Image (cartoon, rainbow, N blue to C red; front, side):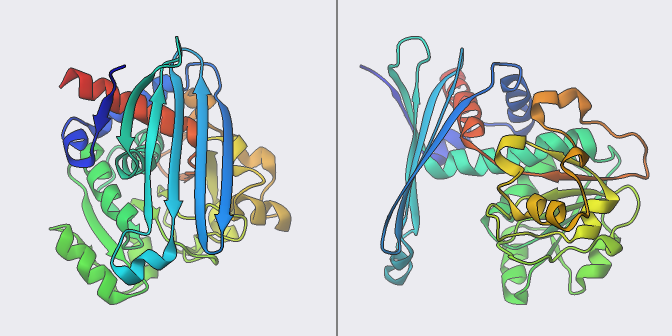
Length: 304
């Protein structure tokens, strides 16, 4: 049996952000994925397996270990790999670097929505959160909005300064409310459990990209953001009832489930109705996206 082994740097050299968005869009034209997650904990350590099967595309099993004590020894806290199998005969086609798939899946998921919901003339892009995902967003959004100017805000000014040093040309914001008010696109990529983004700060025409919250006890945007915006998600199944960004405003009555206008199964609905409307996208992730992105990476690898 022969299969590809795709490491991070060599794999990334083959990839293109806009081609990835097209691959994700095409993936949603296929039958809906069958998805399963398995979580095993041993003390503070975790093993997470996320699996997806899409007819005609294949099977992906994304396995990762999260071991917090590794940080004390200077080792990576998260390690893993993605196994990609053939839909036709179940044979192993590729083993892909976990971090490669996660990076391109997370940022590409948001980029697809932005290419449809953000104003095409968007120039000022604010990234809230100075972590790894924020750095990926500068690369991804820069591909679709080549004239954009990026600004970063972070709770820790030192973290924002490091971010700007790693991403030449990115400015650092000291005043979050002023930075939001000046932005055409606001990307939240934090680990916050309480809102850092307030709807009162948003100007008409802004696109809001919410990435960080992935548990019921996490959220980045307050109820006013959700009330003011037309809301879209990548997948209803992985966001409604699962993530505080959606469940909290539904519980408070700020929005109703019917206010979620569409997910990627209805990609044609992802469009602006006016230049002044505020659009909100919740990036929920999911194993189906890992499969779509892994398939795109393997195809690009084979075509290199």
